[in-house]
Structures are given as C-alpha cells and as structure tokens.
Amino acid sequence: MNTKNESLKHACKAALETFKKLGNSEYDEIKSKLEFVIGSYEFDKNPVGLVEFGQKALELLSDAKKKNPKKITKKVIADLETALMP
Image 1 (spheres, helix red, strand yellow):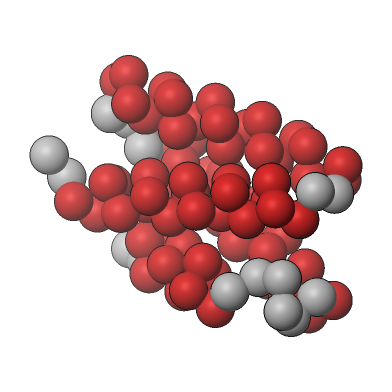
Image 2 (cartoon, helix red, strand yellow):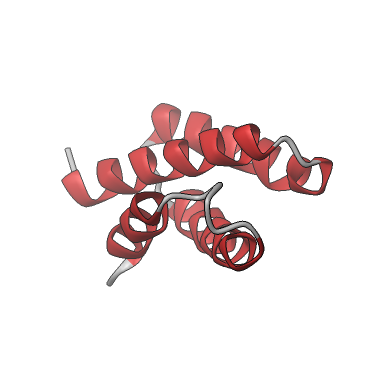
C-alpha cells in the first residue's frame, strides 16, 4: 500500500468535508468530483484523479480561505499541500 496515496486520499476526504461545511453551491462540482475520485481510488488504487482534483480543491480552498479565514483550517490546506508534493 502506498502511504503517499493514502495520505492524499485522506487529505481529499478532509477537503470534501470542508466544502460540505461551507455549504456553498458553487462548490457542488468539486464535491461531486472529489467523491467520485475517492471512490475510484478505493476501487482501483490509481491516484491520478486524486492528484488532479486534490490540486483543484487546494486552489479553491486557498481562495476561499482568503475570503473566509475562519471557515477553513490551515491543516486542511497543509495536508493537501504535503500530500501533493512530488
């Protein structure tokens, strides 16, 4: 089992939960994409989707944190950054 991929999966799950807590419909697409790629990774252990949408989630969360600093924890962003490092 690749622990880097598992870390990325957990970071994506945390990002998904954060988007759900924000409750903003503009994040509906990224929420559904994250749910899909997490499930897909569980099935085939191919992290390509996690990497792609993990990066998109990181961008969206970083932007959202600028607007609402108290709604997004540093840990969610830091975990994504760490998991996405090559």
